[in-house]
Image 1 (tube, rainbow, N blue to C red):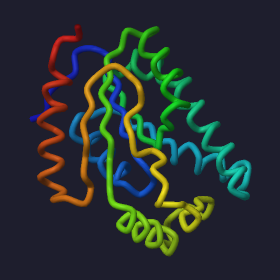
Image 2 (image 1 turned 180 degrees about the vertical axis):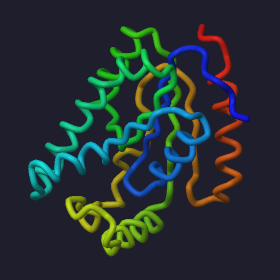
Image 3 (image 1 turned 90 degrees about the horizontal axis):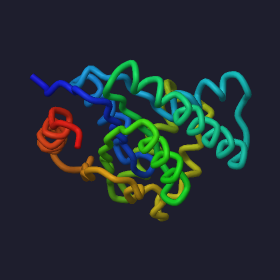
Amino acid sequence: MPAQCTDSRLLLITGPPASGKTRLARALATRYGCGLCSKDQIKESLFDVLGTGDAAWSRRLSDASFALLFIWVPQLLAAHGLVLLEGNFRVGEHDAPLRALLERSGTGAVQVLCLAQPATRAARLAARAADPGRHRGHRDLNVDVSTAGGADFLDLPGARLRFNSEADWHGELAACCTELDRWVSAPKV
């Protein structure tokens, strides 16, 4: 039985593209019974309404998706206590708005950084591009896995956990949940 959250808490699942964020976020949302807000879900809705385009257009829709996430978080925290945000948050860009949000709401946070080697990420991106169920707006084959973008923690207060999505999935998930159970059930300081 997972721990129950008694205060508002923000759980951030971050990491580079194809590092296992979405799979982990879905598992944690189910375990903790919390809402899951995903940058890609918002971005896909924007693709449907506004259309797809080149890399610059995709980046603008990503920026808009993150902005919407940040707007909704205070209301979601007030209503649900524990909120899970998933996306490839950008160090140096998303730190300040999230830090301000945490300070204004008096909310605690934990970050889980998903990691995988570039070759694994490239294979996952190629599989996504070939998946007919994947939204066509994503530019999976254009992602440069050799860059370290998204492969670091944001400069935010709170616990930091690493999740190796290439390791034994169930073992990594169990270890992550052990730490998160303590965080979720601990009184907020």
